[in-house]
Image 1 (cartoon, rainbow over the protein chains, first blue to last red):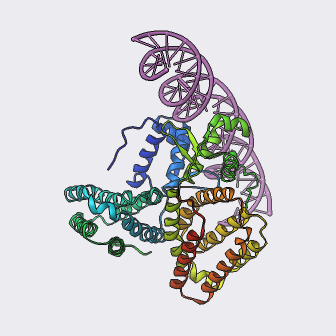
Image 2 (tube, each protein chain N blue to C red):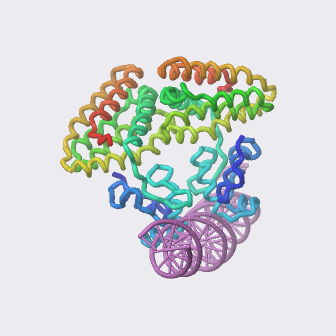
Image 3 (cartoon, protein in one colour):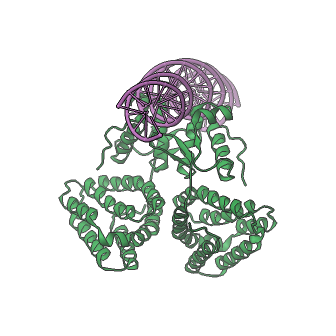
Length: 217
Length: 217
DNA sequence: ATTTGTAGAACGGTATACCATTTCAAGCTG
DNA sequence: CAGCTTGAAATGGTATACCGTTCTACAAAT
């Protein structure tokens, strides 16, 4: 739930606007994002828009056709499997690496859980959930691990957003389930070995994956 | 050892030229890559150069300062550790996923090994070695896994290139060692379970990491 | 009805020009 | 001599204009 305070660079602003539009489903997957049109609408020139589109491609939110046009990414269930296979590779590693640091100081994680309990929309819960996992990776002292994970986050948010929109009957109270699972993880960081943290994180990610209502079309 | 045939996009050309200069050590780490200067030298305008610099940043070959200037990446031994921790997370996973496909068809891998045996420079050996690992990930049917790995490859090449340049007395005949180890991996793909392939790949990557003469400054 | 041809619009790639910011060194001040 | 000031040069950010390519829709031909 972070809104960069209208960064100085217009490219960043354009990127942020487009990102949230895509994730919120305001623009449908497969839609063409023409530079000129976007530039006109955002009131900037094509140059920063180009930059924004490249950044979004890096995050998997737009795909470029061979001819250089940018389209909003369309995700399939196979894409979802790819993403989770990678979460399962990256996050347990991150947890193991972060364990020594989080053992002593898990304040940020605690704070995140409190916010989760108070969250009022399913979207906020999702965002805070991902934030929690990101916080762990931030403590892993492996900047590239964090970078790679972040490059997947946009697609995760897109996928989960689509899921929530489809199953309108969203149980907002994944809140407590999420918060509870995260508290168990914190306890593990405090008391157990790095190996145990790694293992619990693996189970947590795997468990969530199986929990989700995946339309395995 | 691939030279894109002067792609239509000048940005790609600029990117390729800069990439090879950085990896070959023609420009020292820490050097400023000013848009205007590069543009002037390559005979193109600043726009494609900008694009190239962004692409190189994604691959970790240049870093942007806060003010937006691009500098050639300087790698520390900590960076090397980060890279290998990630190889150890990604490549075994890739091997496991690729196993079913490679069991039947490992022609590309065979071909790579033959080329490795004939390689004439240490740089070629390194490149073919990385190609071998990349071929496995290409067979993993996880496009994002491949994408993430590729985003690390440039930094690996940069690091290894620096290492070779430092230890002039490079034993070119890592050739046979590499080829031999890779043949063992192919045999594993043909005869063993995906789990076994995963495990062997982990050992292979780990073994190489320990083999390298790391100046653990 | 399906396919092919074609003209015009849409779009991306690039060059160039202008402006704001940063950098850095010369010069001034204490 | 150290530290600060300042101003010119370097650099990046952005806008705009031009050109070639690609796309699309409509028309002609089979």
